[in-house]
Image (cartoon, rainbow, N blue to C red; front, side, top):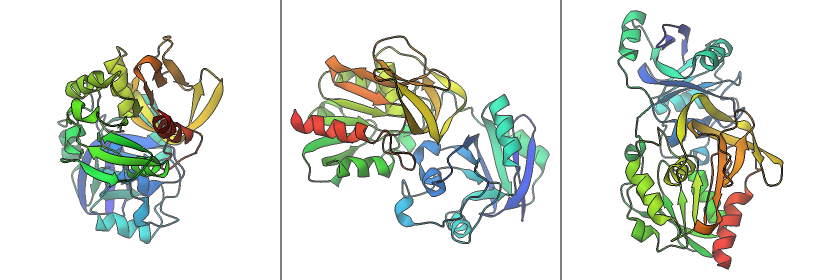
Length: 344
């Protein structure tokens, strides 16, 4: 079955359908990760996005249930140069995901780097390109979109009930690998909805602000909650959680041209001059800052990748210390947070 990807600027990329028949709208983005295709597709931070993989072959090591970062795919569609299966393509079919193979992903990525991430439609089957483009241009932009409420748990639940420290996770679109890493580090973990009462969260030994999709600026209530927790309980923000901590402490966020997505992003820890190779997935970032609390910076564009407020016992990382998937350079961030709570 034929298919195509249509970008809002009128560019068309043609390929072959290897997933579900139909169409999907989303923001066209790319990831440079060489592995972890199943983790990427099920990561809630990819909500409302069409993901292009830069690796030339996707699906070659199959699928497994324990690689999923959530209970279902969150990417709207998948675009690949060459899809291998049948495990992977069968999985795409089973989960109703529009997926295209045979796309010139090198040209697509160059185009997105130059023009920026943009609205798009992935079509599997026969359709009018003109009508598809008209429909794309009627879709909402990613700027200003608050997507957290549609992904967060509706009620609290216990992920692990025993540990050396009690940690509440504010679910903004949390990956399972973050919860697993917290539990492996020795924490008892309870997951709370995005609109949880700060007074209840403050009763724990520590709070983790999770990753998640969309623009952080419209999340005014979540930012207020983070501000209310400062100084009351130790905080660790990850990805979107980092951006909320930044907004709660007077920093600014903005939309990146094409985002940071992949498992090979260099980050400088300013205190030690050590460079971490990190896993990242975000389209918005914290603006560059010379303030002392900006502890980590991106070596690509100077955006703030880490914050530390010792007096308020709050810190954050824009990158993913759970490395699900990705390099393990930043693994100690989670285990050290748990150990500090145990020792307090």
